[in-house]
Structure formats: structure tokens, C-alpha cells
Length: 385
Image (spheres, rainbow, N blue to C red):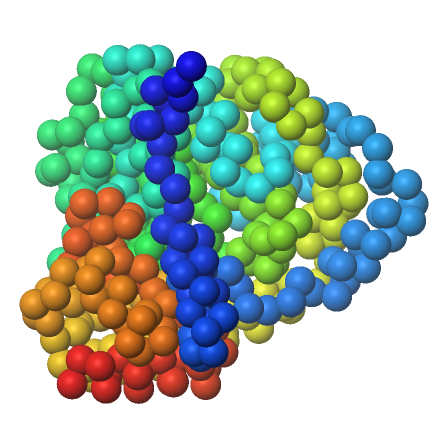
């Protein structure tokens, strides 16, 4: 027996691998500043925790509908309708244990061997991984620092082919923190509107934006019926461990997604869905507090990185990642990330762990306390000086 070839087409997630290395270093007594994991350091808001506890006490501990709690699906449909400016029915919503299943289920439902799927590079590693697992061909779409890590539209048009079936967009973006300007989204929509393909719009960071709320391509003319919206509760509501996300699909796709869900995890945990309902319908103050703090941290880390010799860092428009260019240090990204961890005690990620176009960059998550960010900057400055 051998492991199936599809597993060889998948890849791990570098953040968790570096976390293991950092924990091992801490076990030797070394202090480590953790800037590798994309996880808000804020607690889940108390009213959401209380809703989860109440749901447990009220008996939300049994099987539920595969597609998701109907009340939560209606709340999601109302929320997406109001924030994206498009009509959404609860029947279009599928609730999943985290947002990753939306990626996986969408690929398995829509892609065949020989198809092509375009994804941002540098980008969330799971994009390429699940495209490959589906048997389709991953087609990297370069994101350029010169365009604020948005898309080279000429390159985008040139990469489209008759075999392109899916295009993944992510804004605000992991790992760069970049956002796709509305005019670029309109240009992309004009290019693909009449093509036989779908867009998967990963909007998991849409509430963590520092200037204006990012535009969803689904809100543009003729694109709602061609777009899958991926969103969830992990980032904006600091609910990473609750494992709850959702997809909003064109109606004709929903049955296939539910078929995959019932054959894998049956449904999403019943009590976490009640907590998510409270997240949507309850007070939103905690989101604003968190975003303002992330903006403050962003300004500190970007300024600090730009003061270090050989490093330049664009100011991200959203999420909680800084993606500095380190080419002038003369050290490749993997080696430098390793040295920063081992010698300086700061855990970060090499940009090429997010794809080949990430070479020459590092990713720092500033979902860490401000005083720890300042410690990290001082250590990196000492190392590179």
C-alpha cells in the first residue's frame, strides 16, 4: 500500500510548523515573541461566550441540519445582503466548521482533472493545496508590491484560458494585508462576467479594514450569481477555536456542498452556531475596539520595520499582517526567518511559504501585544545591524 497521490499534491501550513519550532525553543528557556500565527490575541467577547454557554445548557448538544441552523442562516443572509448590497436567501448559505471547508468543498464540487483554478500568490497556502487535491491545475496569480499587493490586470487576463473554472480572490489579504481597489475589481468583473467560471471571494478579513470597507466583487453588476462568498467568525470575533465559518453560494451549487458536508462532518457544532448568531445580532463594539488596536499596532510595526537597514514595508490596508521586503539584506527569506527565530527569539514566516512570489519577504502577524511588537522590532534591528 502507498499513500494516495493526491496527498502529495497538498501542503501544510507554515504558521503551525513554525509554532512548533518556537514552542521547542521556549522549552529550552528562550523568550520568543510569537508573530507567526494569524490569530487575534483578544478574547472572544463575553456576550458570545455567554450565548455558547446558554446553548449548551439549553440542549444544543445534538445533531442539527447539515446546511446549518436555519435561524443562523437567515441572520447570515440578512447580514450579507446589507453589507454587500445584494439579495441573499438563507437557502444560499452553508455553515461549516471553520471557513476552510468552504475552500475544500467548493474545489471538490466544481473542479475536475484538467480544469484550471487561479489563486493569489503570495496567498493563503491552502488555496494551492486544495486545488491540487481536487486534481485541477493551480495557476498562480502574482500580487505585486508596486500595486499595493493588488493584481496585475494584464497578467490576470493573460492567465485565463478556456480551462479556467475558478478564480480565488482575497481582500484584505493574507499574507500581505493588501486590498484590491474597487477599480481593479470592476476590471476583473468585466473580464470574467461572460466566461463559464465562478469566483471564490475570500472575505474572512472584510471587517478588519483600516480605511474603508473592502468592496466585494459579488456586489458588482452580474457577479452575484457568479460568486461564492467565503466568510466566518474566527477573525473579526476572535472565535478561532469555535470553528465556524460559512459560504454564500449560487443556488445551483448548494446541494453539492451539502452532499460533501454530510459525507464528511455531518454538520457544524450546534452550540457554536448559537454563539455565532449572537455574534451577528449582538453588540459590535468589540469589533471596533479590536480593529482600532490593530491599526495602532500596524502603524508601530510598519514604522519600526522601515527603520531597520535592508527592510522596507508597505502599509497594509487590512487584516493584521505586515509583509516587509527583505531583499536588500542579501539573505533569502527562509534563512532570515530561521535566524530571526533562533538568534533573535521572534517567530515569523518566510514569504515563500505563501508561494514562490513571496520570496524576498517575511510575514509578521501583529496580533500580539504592542509591547511585544516593540521587543520584536528591537531584537530584529539588533540582529540585522
